[in-house]
Length: 390
Image (tube, rainbow, N blue to C red):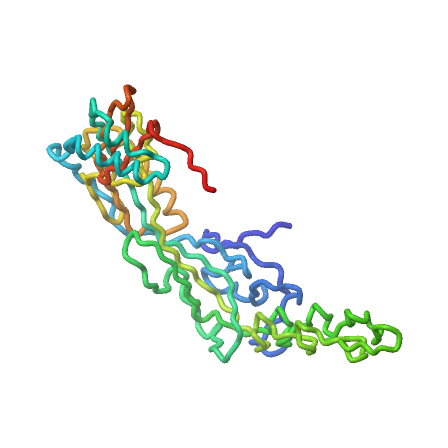
C-alpha cells in the first residue's frame, strides 16, 4: 500500500514514515534504531511526534515537504498610476557611438578583423526602442525533515513543552529580493537514540577484511612460504597480513556517530527566500530577437514595490498592461500556495535599440546596438576567419 498523507486541520504536511517499528520497553529517551544496513537520516518511531501540530508528516531523511503558510492579513493592493508620457523617449545614439560599439565588439572576437568597423560606411541608423516589463515576487518557504548529529551531551528536550509551529519560529530574513537560506533546529523536538549505522556500537566492522583485522598474504597466497623452504618475508611466514584499511583492528570508527554510539535526533526546519522573476519584452519590428535583451538594461520608467502589487494601468502600450495583468495573477496564484509572499516589485524599462546599416567592400551589412551597455549583435559580420590552434 502506498504511503498516505497525514492531514491536520485540512493541511497536508507530508507522508507518514512506516519504516520504524515501536520501541521496546525501557528508558523513554532511548529509541529503537532501524535496520543496521540503513545509512540515511533516522528518526524516532512512527507516531512518536503525531501530537506535535505542524510536524505530523515529517519524514525520516526525505523531508516533510513544503509547509503551507498561514493566511495573509494584508490589505488588497490598489492601482498605481503609470509613468508620464514626456519621459518615454530615448534619443538615438550617434554615428560615432555606433562605430565605437562595433569596433569594441570586433576586438572581443579572436577571429574578427577590425576593418569593417574602421573602414565601413554607415548609410542608415534606425531606432526601435522597446519596453520590458518585469515582475519579481519575493517569497519565503519552509520545509522540515529529520536530522541527526553525534550525541555530545546536547539537551534532550522532546516533550518538555510543545514545539513552536513551523511558521512561528523566528528567522533572520535577508533584504527584499535577495535570495538566502537558513536551517534551524526546531526547539523541543530533540531526542536521543542509538546510532542506526553501527547499532549503537560506535564502530563498524571493516568490510575489507570482514572484521578479522587481517587478510591472506598476497605474496605467498597464505602458505607462509615463497619458494620451497623460503619463509615469506612479507608476512613473516604467518600466511596473513594486517588489513591496511583498519590497521589490524578489524573495525573502524562509525562515520555517522563519530564513535559516540548515540545520536541526537531532531526536526530540522529549512527556510528559503527566493526571488521569482519573470520578464516580458514587447515585440518590436527591428528583427532583433527578444532573447538578446536578457543581459542588458534600459531606462527605468516605472517602479512599484509593495507587499502585493496591482497590475499596471494607464500605460499607453496595451501589451505591457496585458503582460502585467497576466503575470501578477499567475504569481499571486502560484506562489501563495506553497510559500509566503513577502514583497512584489514591478518595473517598466525602455530599452534602446538601433539598427545600423553600413557598407564595406561594396556589400551592405547590418548590426544592432542595444541596451544602456551598447551591446552589439552582428550575426553577418563580414570579416571573420577560422583560427587553428597548433
